[in-house]
Image (cartoon, rainbow, N blue to C red; front, side, top):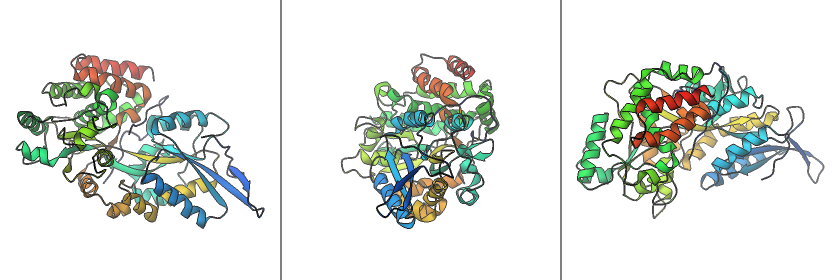
Length: 437
């Protein structure tokens, strides 16, 4: 799974932190439905065009069921669900929103990408229509889908990031408790190496998995106020940014990552970083809430292994950031500004207790906390339980800070980890990219 990017001019937003306690079809406006088909009996049928990236079961099968159930209860509505690969979908949405044939309802990752869409006038303001849903999800959890305090989308899945680990490999290396501090993590790496085991898998070839290590060190070194301010100012002059880069460089110097990590992919095949964790070839991987599903898909029996555990990113002694904060992210949906009223109503249905409970049963973490009890995987139950101890959650930095900054981090972090960039040079590259935003 990848995540988003993009942004434009300064705008007062609350995106920096949010709390967790194939053809195109024309769409119309609220007075003229997106598509008016005619049934055999001559009745007008409104068509709602829905684009999303859930292209594999069990998620895809579940969304089909959701559509069928909703259409059965709304005989005047037809939902045209169109499914795309994640990377393709981003491009298609960007192009379609600039055309005369945008989708009515589309995947929304928030952050700088949403800012661009709002500034261009593409997205419907949902603020006055979703107060009840925000109250259930939690106001802080919706911040990533807001611009200037107005709500332009809602998340349907949310989750925190942490380190996924192999309990059996920890036991084999003599590690009796999960690392709570950076020193603990370094000690665990040393024990795993001594036992002849690969400590941490990272998909360096894809860039962004390595960047997540920097995100988490920045979260430990930078105050929430700094993270919020730089979402709009794009200054990155606080010493915490360089301190985080130094922390990461120092940690990388202890040889924590798998052999050949620079050319390791993140999620494709048994040789990927997720595949290494899935098949006992590496003891840990830093990833988002989707990891258990990816790992499960890469095991011989296609099931989440019983050895899989999870712990929060460790604290950094002396760090200036909140040591109980967590990186997090989610997926959501937005309506095109000219979408019919049925678009908002369908989003509200997706976020209902019933639909979210069914979504949780597919092995995904719902945005609606009332549905958490329907999670079937013990590891996800554990993660959501531990999420209650998080002080605040921080949306992915490459999402918040936009394409230029995000790409600068993702493209240069591997060089930092290899010692080809000094921490000051790394931060300078980020600052230069931010100046072009």
